[in-house]
Image 1 (tube, rainbow, N blue to C red):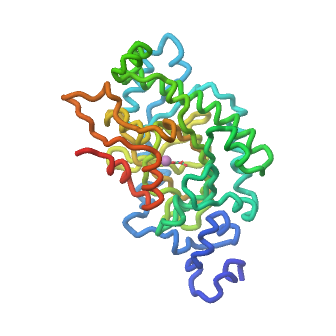
Image 2: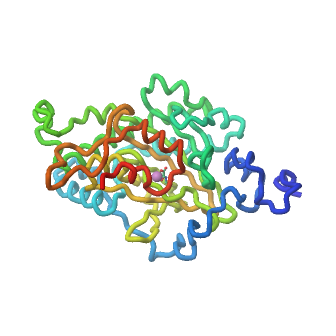
Image 3: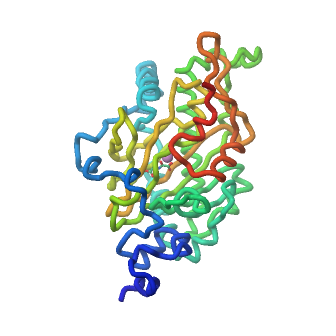
Length: 378
Ligand code: OGA
Ligand code: NI
């Protein structure tokens, strides 16, 4: 009898595990040797991924996302790349960023330490489990394991990055290199993000003469508020799944911030975006980041750039990703940039802030773009 069968000796089916075991996360369950997806993770039939249709092998559902060559954004070709970036943000909400200049070692160290964190014994990882959605360090499973009626096939570690002096001592002390590696990685990603924001503000027409215009308060914005902005590093682990057709690594969602920079597993596909009504795979490109527009940029751009629904398939091979989510400082209101609002183009969103986002997420399940929809002025 397998260890998992011992655990559920009284129940007939292996997938009817007690809820308390699901609370320990998918890595824990997989280590116990489960052979079926437990009931807690089984999506209603209409929400399942329909793998025969969206097969990761089916070329008809592979999307070539726009590729933005970051090195060219810094050179004489800038105006051309700015145009490609504007199209990517407007028509896809997603792009692949290549030649970003972040040293390979910084990236491979980050990936490697994330892998090793998820290999730690449950007892070690569970020290960082928290029911507080606003906690600076939070390890867990699904999205919000206190509320989600069906769990996602995913364990995560979320690390808030500001201010470093407050949060670093709270980050996991094991593996011993986790703090330094994540610190180095988050600083590189923040710089990269700021350079992307600079380009996006230029595309939105919000940067010209920013100093003088800032002073006359006519709606431009300096980069300072972005420099002081929030950053969250999310390490995701999607263990090998025995029945990928019944569950999802992440259910359809949009990201809340301005931009997310995602380091995907180079070998295992799983990320899909909703494009033209179809779920399409985002192909891993070596040494690239997948960048996507978040809800706050949608609001800030008054709907010009829209956040896009995406999801993660559970797969038969385990997969790791590391997302860096960026937005304005926690206490800042997020609203359409005044310069983008006029009579012909009235404000389409209510101002929002992190506190209301966190309240919303702690009180309800993330479903599609429901938070953003709640901020829309009709
Ligand atoms: C996320 C996300 C995708 C992935 O962390 O919000 O969408 O491939 N991740 O892990
Ligand atoms: Ni996401």
